[in-house]
Amino acid sequence: MTRDEVTREGPRRGDTVAQVTDELRRRIHDGRLLPGEKIRQDSLAEELGVSRIPVREALKTLGADGLVRHTMNSGFHVTRLSSEEFDQLYRMRRLLETEVVRAAGTPSPGQIERLRAVNDEMTAAAHHLDLSEMLGHNWEFHFTIFRMSGLDLIITEIERLWNLAMPYMSLFVYDEASRARVIDEHLQVIDLLASGDIDRAVAVLDAHRHDPRPLYIYGERA
Image 1: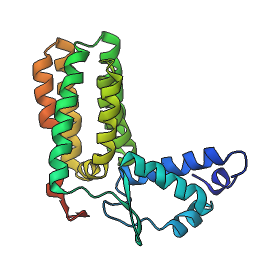
Image 2: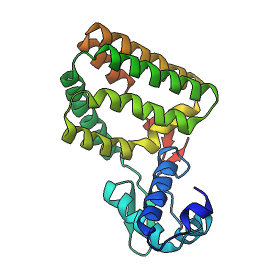
Image 3: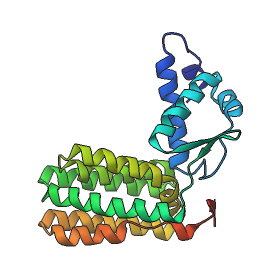
């Protein structure tokens, strides 16, 4: 986001808030803002070339999504999950994601082709060490599968859970072996879905759903 893109706050104030919200969400998702980190509104507004108003409104939006939390006399911090919250989050993900994958059934040839294309784009991003782009394609890959189910209300809840987990999930792309493993497991899932073996696809996705807690110590990179 450039300064020119975010300085117009008159009739385009809503656009400015949306741009600031998207930028903050990207920074949280790709680990530039770490769980537990304080968000300094003044410095962020100056960096983005906006007033504090769109920053504050963006933080309220992200707070409603659970990505940030407000503490009295301390301000906004990136949400840091407790071990108990992690247990609940990953339990909900497993239950809901399994439900939508089973409901989706066997994809059409066109859908399989789309999944292969997304995974190819993810592979290229990994090769160029564009980790933010890789994370975006990883999200697209999984939600392409989820949306095949047509269970939109459940998918909306899965998206909320992914938003909460993304700051931790992003750690896997910093390791070369982990990047290769994610891409390889995607290929396994594609082949199993194409063959109609939904049970094995669900099993691979269960193993693929990494618990990132060992990579974090009190919300900081280990």
